[in-house]
Amino acid sequence: MSLFADFLPIWEDGMKLRCRRWGMVIDGENDGTQMIIEHIVQFNQFVDVALSLLAPYFRRECISLDEKLIMSCALYHDNGEIGGDVMEPKKTDEDDLKEYLSFERSIQNLPQRIQNEKEKSFFLQFALKEDTSIFPFYTQGIIQELRTNKAVEAQVFKSLEKFEYLYYPYFVRDRDPDLLPLVISRHMPSYQRYAEKIPGYREVLFTEQLEAWMNSVLAENVLVK
Image 1 (cartoon, one colour):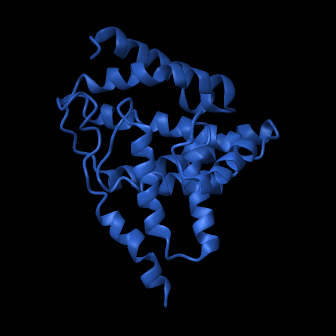
Image 2 (cartoon, rainbow, N blue to C red; image 1 turned 90 degrees about the vertical axis):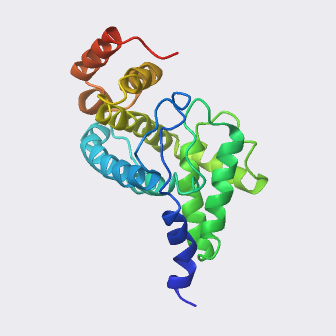
């Protein structure tokens, strides 16, 4: 046939990614307006810029970083969320499996070499997950390879994913004032750990100034439990 037909399931799934994000964070109190497809575009733009700024710090430490793999993961990591977004901490292993199976169906018409590449990209987001037994047996080799050979990339991806969570709560801070302090309180410990481990994270992302601002936000707000 043609790539037109083979790519069509991925394109059609993209039309189903117009579901709301964030709606489940505060037990329905926050309706949310950001769509999953909007998040994918915004997140990819953020990752592209962030990797460019982090690159000199990795070179300085003589650490090789597979930026293409990270960008590909950013592009496809939420493609399985066609039924809607489930946010942490409510997301379960079963939700992760449903997302993978949906993603797998969307790429099944592509040449096997491309399928393998995209599955590797998709699973980068789960490479640091302690228990991945929920995923099919035939994917365990992919996950183990990523753990062994791409652990740095997995950590960088996860650090950027968690950092990008800040933008939407900041954008709606006047309408939903509880969301920003909630996200900061949940993820600030992770930012602090990443700042110690990832070259350039402290200088580029979780700067001392940003940390001070986050602390001020937490001090000024009563957090949602």
